[in-house]
Image: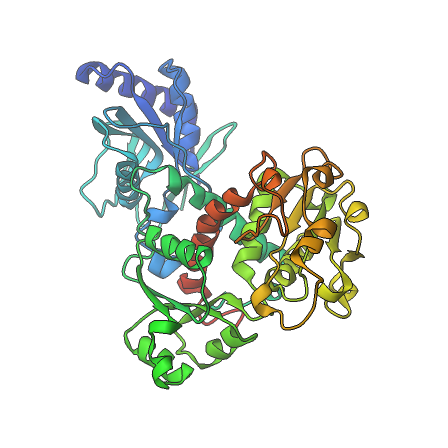
Length: 165
Length: 313
């Protein structure tokens, strides 16, 4: 088991997110965290980027592609997005990008709330193993891991990030 | 939970899981596209042998908001009038590769009977059978209560009216007991109470003025004229004089008490218009929450992990 310096990675992610916002001229983004780990990371980015708007929260349970195998998750909670997301620049935030299926589900859910101007992706740990054509716009760290290894995030305070064999 | 037939078969954890899942579905109502893809490709049949507006339409909307396909079959237009038996109708619908039947029937036990005969991949949801049970109504009622008062162990709930003919009351009492409600009162004339009603775990009042004192929730029941053969009450007018919920009687309850009614309401029989349309009335919220609660029940029943396990009948 290897522990990563979560605080340092969050700072790096905040820096990279700020950089691509500048590059693309995004001044008032809407930060949306994917429950649960993504929300913890998003709360910290809100501070680093000094954004005063409320955070959006997505629970993608109802949009997962494995319902026919897994059924309803017992921990599901309501999603919460602001009244109108149409024409907003959304920054979608999650703790780990692995297969890309969670992000696919989140994109589908976002578009059921409206038509955003753009969606970008900020990820704390981008690991190998993509099954869909999805990539992050800002990352804390990129790791090449074996299938048997997984990244484990616990929180919310403090956020602890570990690689478990 | 493959079938959902009555409340009595649930434990505290299962009941709370349904309510929590329903809470998550309330956010779908805020989406521009009021739909989630969960039950895409599933076929749900509304099989109604008795008229219904709220239950049928909210089940239909719940299924559609889960992206399922819905068939609505009511007895007046079905083959049963041509002499086809209940089971033959059922087997035909099953042959169309349907996944769930939502059944409303005037006979107590009809949903159980159907559940015993369907193929293993089919779920049965009871949408009301005779005087026996109306479990989804009871769940949306406790969901509505929980939105206002979190802690059932502190609540006094009064159910007022025709307990005898009411499948809703029976299911409500079961659900409230599972949630460890502090006190459940039933308020009705003796003629509208079942024998041994005390054994359901309730306190019985025949006088409204005593029974409504300090309660946190008042559930009014509809006077079920269609199920009454004989003189259960002298007249509707007298019933309203003795048991109708008026602003004066509502004032006996706790100041933040809520008023509920499963509908359809008989204004001036069980409830006055001032109360039905007043700020403490949750009657329309109940209808709204009915969609989220039914979405939760449908998706849990169709969950693959639940199939073939648990509450088999």
